[in-house]
Amino acid sequence: MREYGHRGVLLAASLSALAGFVDAVGFMTLGGFFVSFMSGNLTRLGVGAATGRWDQAALAAGLIGLFVLGVIAGALAARRAGEGRRSAVLAVEAALLLAAAGLCAVGWNGPGMAAVVLAMGVENAVFQRQGDVGVGLTYMTGTLVRMGQRLATALCGGPRWEWVPFLLLWVGLTAGGALGAAAFLLWGLLTLWFACAVVVFLAIAVRLAENRAERAG
Image (cartoon, rainbow, N blue to C red):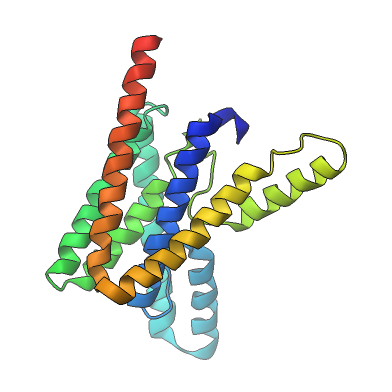
């Protein structure tokens, strides 16, 4: 991740924390299903199919399908805006979270959660590069593997601190999940308004940074 610089790592860690925050809200709303961690939903799909709980299997499959649609939308937004325009992807994510918060505010929790899943899929295109995901923001298995590999390299005399950005992603997701759960217990689905505000702030901050870079270039 060193090619993204300190600001890129900070943005990635912030978005990872947001994913954990939103995932905790979705997990508690959907009774143990996830809005950003699709590996968990894949397990729920398999267990539901094996035990004959077809309602659970169908819900898991639907969430996975929505997430993939979100990934497609994010990738298309990144391509259309130019893959250096992270603010465009963040704007799409913010719009979806705004729709989610509004839908849940009027009691349409199902469509609201669907919009959240789409938003989490979109988020993974923020660091898209040449059509591929440069940094996984809503899942941590690959991040933990990379952290372990960088630690092994450091122990063998390589760069000492290249594992730290991956640790920050993991810490961000974990801390975000804890904060999301605590906020949900206090304010319920109103918590989604906070998540939306965070993404709007990040989109504006990133756009301003892009403008400065364009003027400097």
